[in-house]
Amino acid sequence: MQALLDALPDRYRAFVLVLRHTELCWIEVAAVRRATAGADGEWIRVAAWGVDRPAGVRFKKLKRADRYTVPMPPRVREALTAHLVQYVGSGRDDLVFTDEEGTPLHKQRFRERVWYPAVEIAGLPSYVDVEDLWTYSGAPRAARPAEVSTL
Image (cartoon, rainbow, N blue to C red; front, side, top):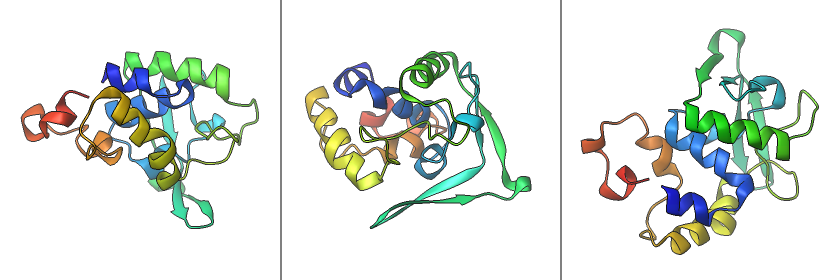
């Protein structure tokens, strides 16, 4: 995992750590806003989904009863706190995870511009996908593919 983190641009490390060490999926993490992330990085409140469309990402707010809060493990907490300070505006509705232009993370663009180059630099097999991070995050180590277990 460290080789992959080192290969990623700094602004995406907290995003990848959240996907890897929680059971949150892309659509949940992509929609996190300043108001739904603890300032100390201790938690993320899932209150919306970010759905990829060809024209960009669209957000869908969840009903109050469907919202939930996920505590962040210590390693993620540190990275998330630093990310909030360095990359996120102070507005309540500012997205926590954006690309270099400040636009929502679009999954395919992220894969092409960030993920696949980092996977190659880290020396991982080209078929390791960002989806593997959350797909196997809650699975027992023995049930994960070998490449994902090492992430």
